[in-house]
Length: 337
Ligand SMILES: Cc1ncc(C[n+]2csc(CCOP(=O)(O)OP(=O)(O)O)c2C)c(N)n1
Ligand code: SF4
Ligand SMILES: [Mg+2]
Picture: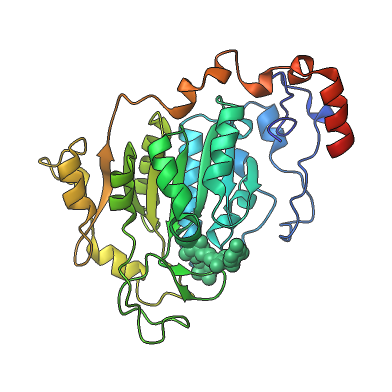
């Protein structure tokens, strides 16, 4: 899965363009121009820029959807960090936002609803050199995936979790989500939501996350900075992104967010390494909504650095077949291949 695309073989050596395999079509999305050429010519000429990450697939998101800003910010962050497409894996779940891996030219894995963090953790363990991003919506990450969210915070694998938080289930056409605000009327909350919304910043802090940031899809430069900081943090890093859904959430609009957000980086008294400060700001929501790095804890080694099975090298770099009992290997082949 991680090799053979973008011109890199499993030994990490580059091959001439004509020998490289075509990127397999993931299906389900119409192609931009009918050709799956991708940006291989750019990788071949050694230029890493935004076009390197151009996908042959055209987004099916509604015009004006906040997911466009998130896609742009992720691409810009990867280019600025000088990460090549073969060095990154983007794992998503199910939802409008979870279509994102199709729309940039890199390794991608769209898994079942609510499970991207489990798949991302597994991929990181299999290949710790890979930069792994989990990208999915508020329903996927905080609702059906809420249990995985909690335990990934405390487990601390070195992955970056970007949540497209539009406060609604958009793909399924507008049911209230775990982050929908009280009073919000939808098809599944005709009397208005009367549950307490999940506050992802407070939950992540309580569950032991070492890096927590919030940004806004309408501020791609700020969002790029947050994604870069999250990717540079060694361990689990959450970037909760306020993402307007122009089709189904007519309350939390671009203007609604823009009128409320303020960046904690502009407050000299704010100390993101102090959990008390982080709790105070993290639980602030309403007339004012803080964005920026809300909490950062250094010095806790990522989960995979403690896994003894990885001390001999990454599983993807080892010839596991040589270590297996040949009889067992044959049985496995008969059962699964
Ligand atoms: C196990 C399972 N339950 C329910 C669904 C139906 N479903 C698909 S997407 C979705 C909600 C997605 O909401 P969110 O994660 O917030 O993403 P958005 O569409 O808002 O970007 C639901 C309930 C599903 N695909 N699988
Ligand atoms: S329904 Fe909402 S979240 Fe989905 S693509 Fe349209 S604007 Fe974006
Ligand atoms: Mg959503």
